[in-house]
Length: 288
Image 1 (cartoon, helix red, strand yellow):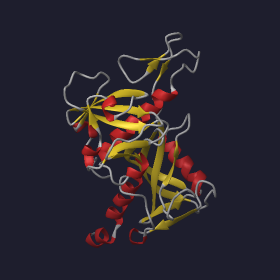
Image 2 (cartoon, helix red, strand yellow; image 1 turned 90 degrees about the horizontal axis):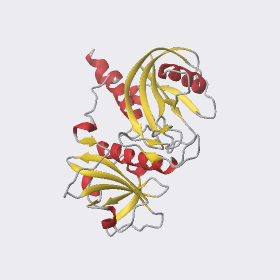
Image 3 (cartoon, rainbow, N blue to C red; image 1 turned 45 degrees about the vertical axis):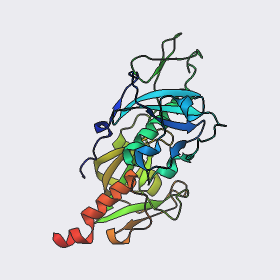
């Protein structure tokens, strides 16, 4: 398996309580009910608006949450009203559209901001007794003052798997994939199953194959809307490709030098596929 990418925690320190600072904060501002992030024209971190408070950006935040510090500067997530206009030289851009062009640490922190704002918006009342919730003091959760039930941000684990057979990789095309793109078999874990169980079930359901050894590859947060993608590499054991016709339209085995259009580089799917081509490509074979 490849070396782990440097952790975002070498730059980012999460925290619940903002310390006093005269340094302008970075504001990850989303238009209410959307994944549209307010960005300036400069590249990298300088694209994130900086201000002492949200009002300095020209709007009153519907909600805001302290995120911690990035490169020593305080960071906040904030929700702008639907009618809010972007300040001069900025615009609201879909976070999904920034998938390939934003620095990976920034993308992850922007995703954290989006997920926490969504959780704050959708968890205002207790799901058990209907009482208005209160924010907890010591972690990202909300507590019901009436019945005591705690409500944490939702994270949905999903597996994504490269299946290998005799030096080839199984790639699949789903109906919603753009530009005839092919990716890996993926799906959400269900109650009562392990991640490895999920890998085997999704593979059988979507392409009708059984698997042998399953190895962990790595993981990636995915804020659309609140997923955690857990990557695996699995060995083919048996069966013929039989697509379900709903989740998957077409699937086939591909050699490293005949790959179709594949996902962009920021995605864990692409990281796994790139690892596969490095391990099984022609240059590797010739050196063995």
